Image (cartoon, rainbow over all chains, first blue to last red; front, side, top):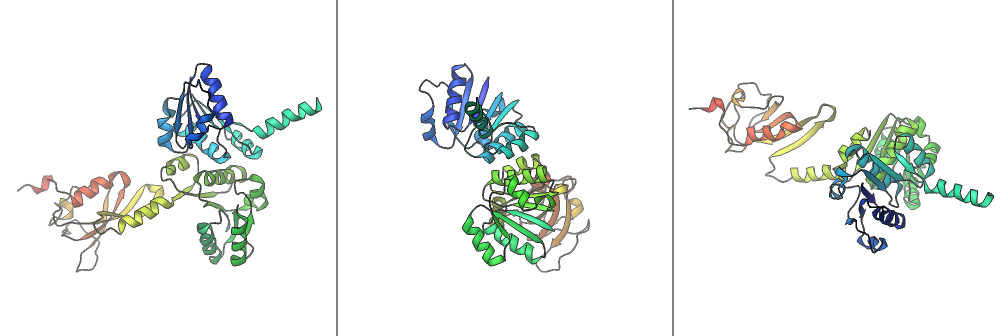
Length: 132
Length: 228
């Protein structure tokens, strides 16, 4: 599948490596070229410098043909906006968005975005570990 | 009206000041504590310190009873989220967002923001209009109808010079509202009004027909009425 990832932090780079080794065609976007150092050395996908809020940059990353879009920058609002652009402007079939703030995550999932909050997920994991 | 303003920068400050003078009830939400302090010192206790995209804070300032939320931070994504939270969580009837990137106008409209104001486009347009040779000036847009009120200067070499308005191949749906001649009083043109060089014409057009209208009034062409 054709996958566009926005944000090449630790999670973004790791996910890009995993999906790439599974044989998907991956394009990863980041505003800072230095962050691509985190990609695994055998990464065969495309790393592009660009802002995922900019439609031109998204087009360059192949958003128009993408099957999946994932937003993993540090900013909740940036992720939310980019994901909505991918979903509503470029009609990408599957979009996933990371939102740290649990309240914002709840709101946007009721608005129909597929969202994940590392905050709640990790807190639950910790609870299970500590109580179990 | 009760108005929540998100962003207490220069724009948020002057906007709130104007709204307060008009007698509205205003609260400003600003992330930067020292900006908050300055605003509260100058405008009275109207500024709350915090993130205007957060549901909890917006709830604390009573967004649920707000008539309007205006997001004027420097970041488009923050303005979008503040407006969306206001709209969907608190059912605020009217949301207005400032945008920096003019491209986002379409995106924001698509995502349900009622009004967007692109500071970049506004400034660009004003500067362009100050360039003396600028052929077409936007005076006003009537957003909900998709119409523009524009001013067009007629150059001496235009094919429209010396013609009556009924002889002009004006695009359908455009209207000439006023003709301003250098030495005469402005008048509402009739079909028989003659266009002269250096006239200024105020016209109403849709954005798609703007180019065509400009060519009719400023360009050279051979209309069916011009033979002979």
